[in-house]
Length: 475
Image (cartoon, rainbow, N blue to C red; front, side):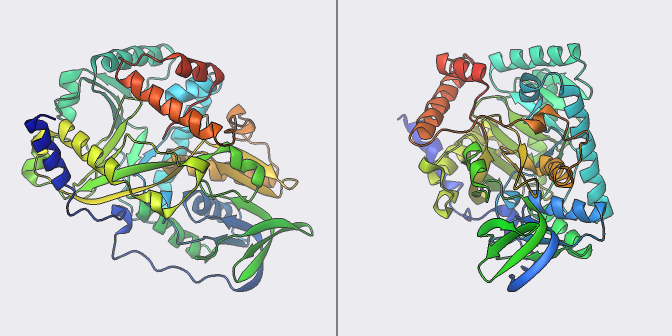
């Protein structure tokens, strides 16, 4: 290694010396206390399992639909402690992991899916106002940036296709000068700015605010109460917990990356570990050197992509790139930290923003994402329609989980709605194979994606075969 490269690596590593190995969002002295665990036996109309966004939105919307409905929510740890409190805080309108994925999979429905997604994001913004959810919600939009010449060409061609299909409303193409006028990085060559389709927010505060709103509407919330088993009980269902049990007419499962209580659903998802860094607050001079007056969320266009954004106090969150699948698909606390990925991310950060040399990172963390082979959520029922589930949000759950909650409530009501009529809702992704085939296939896909990034985006035979089968691996 050249001496200059060694010096840069040392500088990047030093930037992590004081980083706390905890999620920035959860490291908050105002974090609400946990609700007591369930003890004894209770009954309810609707039991919601999971205290992340999926479960919290389901409980809240259930009470909005029918204030008299008796709703209980149980959470194995504390509300928002897992993916809902560890993500980047991008709240996207897209229900399909972006327009490209949605257009490829559901071309006949894509206009309807985009309309429903935009409406869903509007409803989230209204809920933030209605329930006074103090979550730093900003409707900033997002810029997808190109950092290689071929990516700039792809963005321009994609914008042209969107215009031809009538899907470009509110989406602008930015050349190199225009994108750097918004956010200044020497690596930026072009951008695609979705002006209204993305908000940024404080993800943990959103979860905590939703819990408070649920409690205010009369939802009984029990934390540190994992659901251990699910079985039929008379005309309804019974769930056993460590210190008690619940009997419910209907059950909604919002456990996402954690093993589903309906065993046949488990093959459809795998956990993928994603990692992020948070800087110290930028000084006014440092912020001015970057620009970023529009405070948009950003992501780059590579297969191994980064996502980055400003917090309310002008820190930069920088995450992504590595998507790590643990052999066997296990979800374990030991996977929440990966120093080699933190060092890699720090190097990428200073390559993107060399003008911020000397900035330190205060937090470094990781967490598991529930990934499915079509990159976007799937839905279903079990036990003769008495149980509903939604899973597979693949890193886009901050916004889409509210839509998933609406779908689960529709399914439990046995209603045919504009949501349940969608082919996206009525179909399932291809399940992942058992080990060692899952690990081998994912490893080969990751290698192929990295190779494509270094060969002007050219996809090899393996990726082309996956494309034809509608399969993939993404975070």
